[in-house]
Image 1 (cartoon, rainbow, N blue to C red):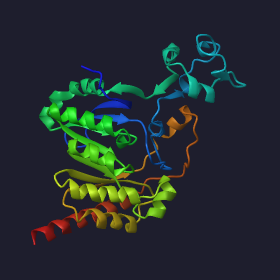
Image 2 (image 1 turned 60 degrees about the horizontal axis):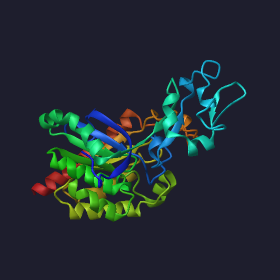
Image 3 (image 1 turned 45 degrees about the vertical axis):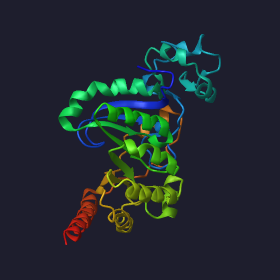
Image 4 (image 1 turned 30 degrees about the horizontal axis):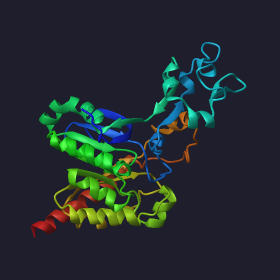
Length: 316
């Protein structure tokens, strides 16, 4: 039940029955807002923290069959047509649309990315999967975007999840003030964190930000929270960060910390490119490719060998 102090957050999506966002069966809560601008980003709808209006031209019925968005109660000029009669979502529409009128679109070609929800509302949805958590050791994962851009909401969400008896995890790029991490980690069992590129100049070229704060936050977190499980991840893109030098530098950084239990490579994919169109955005670059299967195998063997050597050193 929600109350006067029930914190609100901007939620992008809640996905049930997830298997790759931490241990066991999980419910992943995706929040809006990101502090990086990765050129390969497959989730542009998660970058801005505010709720966004989107338009999918493929789903539109067209002016002859519909035309509802060109008439009252929609404000004049929010939606216009091009020379072929297709609807164009104007900048004015993106900035000043009416929440209450969005459901009037019969084909749902006009829709929203994101919704304000309270912690209680999210927990009520997450609680639907409690039987799966009990059998698998699963729970809730808060992802994004960057969940640590909404630290109060994320911390309260995980705190209530713990109170309900299931495990918690976050997915983070860690490019936030340390205070935000420190607010959330006490209620987090598993931290799945990115290290995309170790060299700071290269990191800034491809993500829009240097990584000094990221690495400092992670090192501080490893030391302060030895009882937490950390899993390092790298979204791996051919020609960007799939070189031995980058992977070895990341390994050198994480291996001294025993609470970093795994290092995973996540091959690049193009599944999110179409989202740029519905948001009226241009995809920054379209030449990205995943490394070959042989190259991925080589890098994974490199990582496996490095962790094996760490285990042997610990035994000795």
